[in-house]
Image 1 (cartoon, helix red, strand yellow):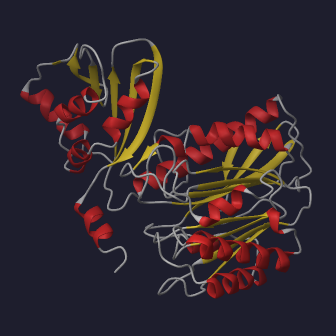
Image 2: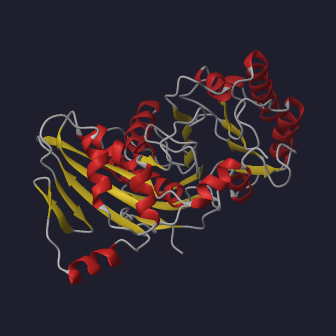
Image 3: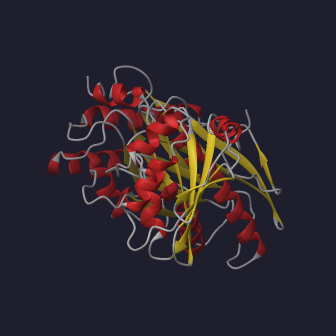
Length: 409
């Protein structure tokens, strides 16, 4: 299966898919089993060999922050050389002990890699409010560093929690100045909401970029990808995005040039497809949906999130039930003023000016078939002008309840 598998993400013409576990020049990665989980890989390290590496970061907006986020926020976020990430424990809610564990991990990795501690970013995922064993995470980081190589397969698996599959890709990007590589590894399946998810995304390129350019592209691409997804409407304590550019290709991307635009288009497509993979891997998910809302600037975002996070809308999606009354209810609870809306499902008008459009038995049967696909699109128009937004969300199945009811046991 190709990486660009969603109909809502187009592969730019100047982008070619490479081997998913590949890396740009000058980057190395590894994953190891440190015993944080009962079995499997659980600690991963990414490293840039180039001293001139530039970077940018984005973190969760939850007021309850994990210790790795707190420590990483104090790091040199514009020149990170390394990332240490683990599953098997989020290191959240463990007080000063958790902070000291994060700092110890950062220091141990820095020493083994020969870089300053402030150039090491951290990311942890797993159960909240449980101790992350310091000796195991530190030993795991050191072991992964000894195994660094040019593939990300083990790293991508080391950061998985309830993910059903690893999420990674490597792209060749043709720029005017030459060809560069762009790769990324992500994880996420539950505790997913706009304004991030229980998700990580680590992006690498061997293009040379100024720190301001990395930060600009990171911010724009995150807003169009991970800020747009919802599985269960729950905002994680641990969301982290790190983007690194090391210049190993010898191709420099100058600000406000065509090459910056081309690289930005590639990064945007990469992050959007990874976001789609997170939604489609939503715990027990069977279908994903795209909701477009058009209307008043101050209202579209609130309405979109109300619909995307509605358990009634999500369960109807699970059952392939075109029960658009649930969408109207969820939209209405987030609106003020007259309820004059239009709704289309897979391009079929079902509501006009707030009233249902009469459908013949054959037309309703066509609508039922349309919502049985893996991807379903809704378009909602509300009063007002000037605003438009989109949210991608998964359905809500019996498996979601089972997975989360048994998560710590």
